[in-house]
Length: 255
Ligand SMILES: C[S@@+](CC[C@H](N)C(=O)[O-])C[C@H]1O[C@@H](n2cnc3c(N)ncnc32)[C@H](O)[C@@H]1O
View (tube, rainbow, N blue to C red):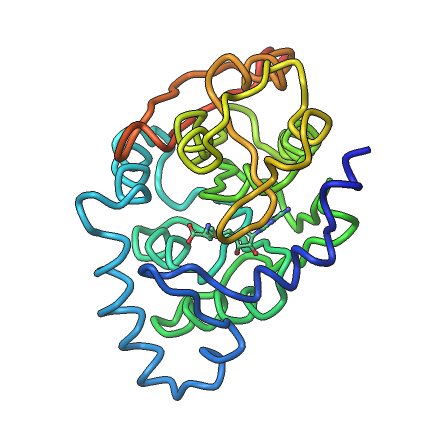
């Protein structure tokens, strides 16, 4: 069973730590900072990490903004928002954002990060229920998730849930660990796409941060969600093609 390999409550605790600039910071600790220190962090350290040319999220950001054909003021659901840094950037660019995460402190932090510049989220959602589904307060135009879906065995369930509240013409944007990164981290060959990783071999659910680890490539994405989603864009990025940037659209949209 998947739950034998994935302990949702343990994940909630593990993700109290936020990977940031090669370090792990406890969200709870950041919540004790004075507003000036948080503002500094948002304006100095955030750009240092996220806007480096080489940063995986920077490649994602570039693709996201270049390809993003949806007009401003549209609503982005940030699944696994972490510190809220990307959400802040979206607010600065006049998008509306909803925040969702499994970790309560991160959600509080993400809201504070938005508040540093006077923004509010459209909704703040704590994910429970084992992480197969998630709450939504209003429909959205983009479901976006950076560095999250390779840390759960519920890729298909989450994306099935994501399209329920996706407005017609909406898009799904993901940044995922690729098969290349998986091979590098585990030094084992990837298993066939038809064999879920949790059933294949428990030894390979290793990850330095999230503890549960999966990998993706275009073939696997097609296998898992190709019956209801179309891959519009799928690029290997970063060093050794370790990450995938994926844009998906609903098949039979508006139909
Ligand atoms: C690597 S961090 C990425 C954070 C943020 N998206 C970013 O790019 O800075 C992964 C985030 O996903 C959250 N997360 C982990 N497992 C999750 C799950 N099953 N569902 C939703 N969020 C999850 C963690 O709490 C953490 O905030």
